[in-house]
Length: 107
Image (cartoon, rainbow, N blue to C red; front, side, top):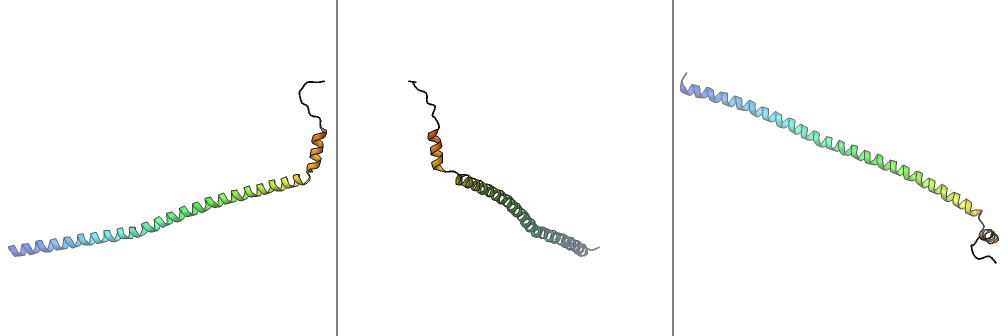
């Protein structure tokens, strides 16, 4: 084999191997860009899950607050009903008619 022929053969082998390496690099870049597109989707899915959890938590708190409001409304209604039967004039008369036990000198 002559020298130019050997150099040509080495050059061809070098070109072919470098092309295969370029193809491999392109495949890796394409795969990584594909996973890059998946990452925002995964991130957005995580954000959606977090938002749903927050919403569920807030709904539970709202339900609890509504229950507390109902309880307070019932207590107000009971107080109004109890005070409707309360006559302040009778209460004063009852308080003045009861003897007061005050300690002091007896005559």
